[in-house]
Length: 269
Image (cartoon, rainbow, N blue to C red; front, side, top):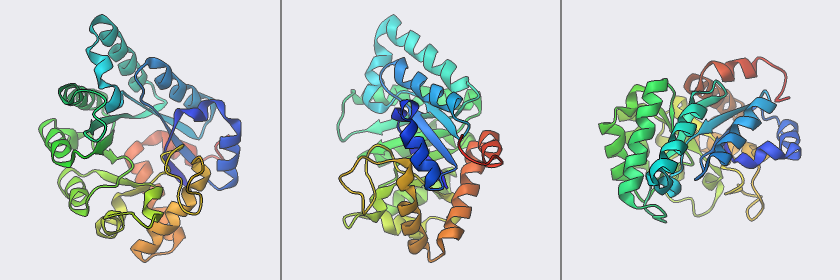
């Protein structure tokens, strides 16, 4: 199985990796996107330590304000840009807009979002997008910035079905489905999964958050991603094996040669 998105805590937790291997997980994307370079470096270290882990590097919308801190912000962006250029990094992000918490001023979130897209285009790497309570604005930035030239994934997708269709049909993006899809209060997410073409779906856990049923309330881990896979298969009217094959193929298509190399090996190691 492919685990589309996991937190940087992976870097120091051998047990998390061991349980993922036991559950059949073949690859994990470890996201380093905090307000300082340490979280980014943690993701890269995890990717270098384990063959089956890749990094996704950037500055989360919550922390966009740190990029406006004069010389300190300039240095942070330089360090993040260098991390994104590392072969162990398969995508740029997570970046985007979060108007739910508004932990950074919206103007600063927009500026950081555009910078990430420009960096992704320069590096020819896909984007990992975070969006919450900001669907129209997210679409606007993706359209205006030329994000479709590199593509990407809407991380932890929980938006409206129409928004999902626009991201896929207009921009060629993928939707990464989290454990929320197993919840009774999953909103429009099940309908979004039904309407999304199978060749544009990925699965994730968003570890350590949003553990799927029957693990709700527990710390989420990549080993739990199979429960999300099973629900996606049910919604698409296919077998779990068919969903596994499709989402794995999709992940390799999006994230590139590093994942193909990993999947040719025996395990995460």
